[in-house]
Length: 76
Image (cartoon, rainbow, N blue to C red; front, top):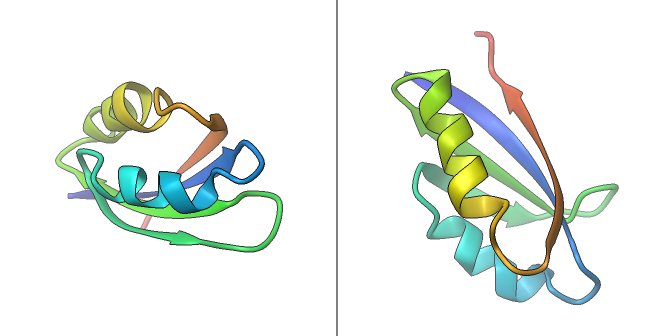
């Protein structure tokens, strides 16, 4: 099992409505609004790194109002 954290930057005022959409995205196990450079942090799991990258590319990045993402794969 592979785990990753996805940092999501949203358009102004979109964090609240995007939070539930991110939470419902395939492969996402948790998501929270945070303060800082990014607006939402999400945890994703998959069988392989490819599964997580597909989920981020096809589900999270495509959401209207998402302006940037950064994916950090856990090494432990």
